[in-house]
Length: 123
Image (tube, rainbow, N blue to C red; front, side, top):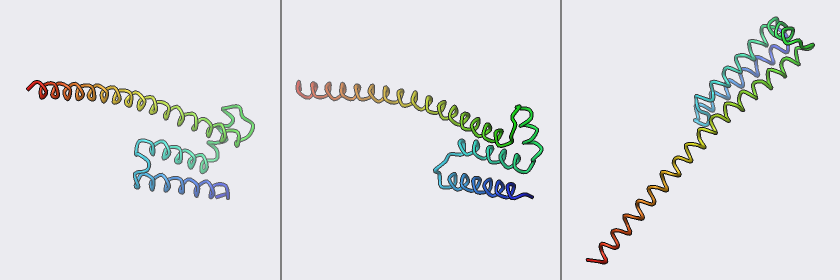
């Protein structure tokens, strides 16, 4: 086992523990943690299965394995950004719907209070 593999294993374990701790303290939802666990497992597999990284590097036509690692890292960040953009869009739509419903309820409440005042004034 090389020094790079030991470091990769330690980093993978630390990231996995950090994700589990964040989920345990409810600072990260299980839905989002799955993405990080998959990325950690993928990084660990690439670290311990050196032939796989070499094969991916050759398949991509890259010259160095570090280029492949950076490419995969950038690809991961793009996937995370896209996922968060989808979630943000859904939340924005939900907030808009809730604001509209709140405004309608406020209008109904104001109308009911006005009708009650008129009814009390005429009695």
